[in-house]
Length: 466
Image: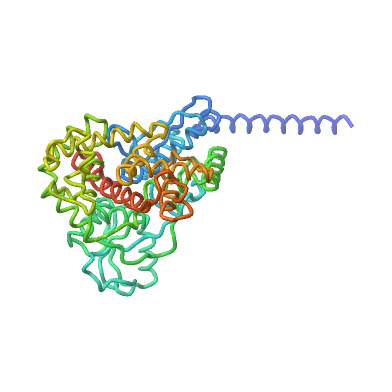
């Protein structure tokens, strides 16, 4: 009996000693493991700061007139504002650097601004949009209109582009195609297609349609593969942060915020007239230099971006100081004689007087609609420049009748055209109006303005490769 108790006691003590030894070894092992670098969501809220890492590119994040811009920036800024966090942005050159920032806990979110690779989906948020890859060719290359037409050809893509996975799949299926990865961004390759230096490149569709404005000689030929997901990346263990972002994406899809942001950056990309754009690019070289200093001087005096005023003047007169409309508006800014006299213009065809008076008149309209926030205030002022402030007041009154905010331009886009219908204009203070005209007018101005801004960004080297 005593021997049994002694043996049992020895076994128990030995087991306890073994467990203690294993516990010590496990503790030492865990202590030697690298610390989890995840930036936990509670700590983000406690610090009041949302650190992100992204690229300096047209579609993600860039500065214009010392203000941060870009579709992805505005999207994540909306998230930060909703969470009442201060957004801090770090710029890197490639996806590998973004992943390193996440791994080291230096950033909470990585925003590639390109389709998520299949290997990244396990640590990505839910997609916020899908976009097809588009084959880009020179507009004269009518022979490439389907995948079969690309057999045996070279396709140039940016090094590391997720499009390579799509092309690799084609190669594995036996399709004869040569893939050439280059250390150039999608825009540079798009430009090379326009210059006929290469035959084909492939980039997401919304980017292609935007680049087409800047290089009209290159065109989207057809889409390749199924729509690819765009998502943000977070640390694999950042479950609460991923959940919060996914919830945010759901909310902005439902309340229209995403649609508004997307429309602001990409909504008018289908507004493309090859002849008009080629003429615009030529006249930027041939006509603008004569008047650019005047535009810069007077736009600065009245608080406008001179490029916006140039875009307006081009829409008005094609930068022709002798232009005269069917309504007898004249000069670069197409002033009516009565308006010109009220603004003290003595020679309506004098570029300096015409530009100064036109911008001063736009400034008066801008002051008149002070209830609206930017950019809606400027858009409404430009619309009133075209259609008259009285008709703009009528359109704003219609907006109120439909319970729409009259200080949002997209609501004016809905109500201005109604002034062409008798049931709406018969009770309007200023009567019938060609209300569709200011809507088209502003769309064209914003198209030209986008091209001018992009040109300035390239010239100032503030838009490095994506």
